Length: 120
Image (cartoon, rainbow, N blue to C red; front, top):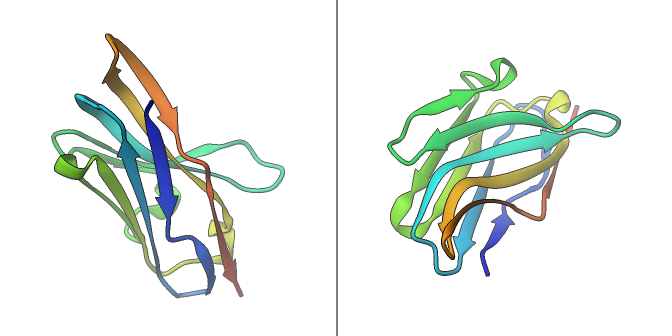
């Protein structure tokens, strides 16, 4: 069984920083893409950032220059460093692993979600 366990959410003032971590556990051979998504109340889930196994990254325009995604392939872990946080960054943040080779098939997995609240 593959599980994604997130940590690092919380409450921070505007302008502050938080770092999210997400570790994938299980008998994983490889993970193609790991990413972070967020969902604010009343809004659809949106992509925040993603990173391939080779290190290529993509960011939502709203977080470019403020957030940095990174991963440790040996630990099957992805990180999201969030700086200069704004109240509009408040959301539940979800970790995702896309293209996980597990038990003979490619699969996607999601973390449980971490609340990030930015106060003004």
